[in-house]
Image (cartoon, rainbow, N blue to C red; front, side, top):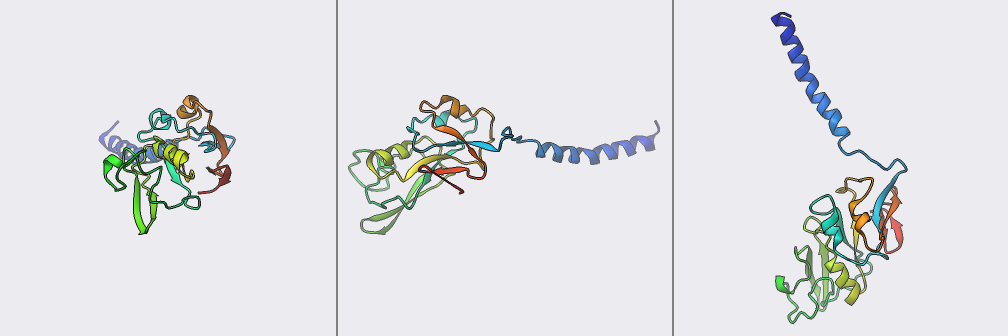
Amino acid sequence: MDRRKFLRHLVRGCLALPLLGLAGLSFRKPSYQPDGLVWQIDPSRCVQCGRCATECVLQPSAVKCVHAYALCGYCKLCGGYYQPFAKVLDTAAEHQLCPTKAIQRTFIEDPYYEYMIVEKWCIGCGKCVKGCTSFGNGSLFLQVRHDRCVNCNECAIARRCPNQAFRRVPKSNLYIWKGIHAKD
């Protein structure tokens, strides 16, 4: 092989590498759900055991806390925001239930506050959900966020869930809002 042919093959190979890389990226996240189903948490079965934060193959977990604003009472004393038996109702870290401060609170008017979940900080531990369910109206609950989930065929969290709260739902209705299927 002469020098000209060698350089031609070299240039063709260098041009083909990005195409192969793009083809590889399109197959990077294969969908193992040929039936069109994905994993989701049924909020009516979830017991907030904390395994969503530790058992997910992703760190932080693809499970995030979701706030159903229509159910929220916007109370000053929020069971999902404050530690049980908090002596002072302020935003100090030692009084907050969330270990990552993923729940932000904004004053509206006395005695109402608005609570917002910062999903990038949420690790899916379920502490706020447990507090909201125990001492509130249950407006906080956990859901698998499918823009983060890798859609494993066998969800690691589903295998470890003590209450079998994970179930397969159609991709057309990814989220379960307190017993109702709805699109996000």
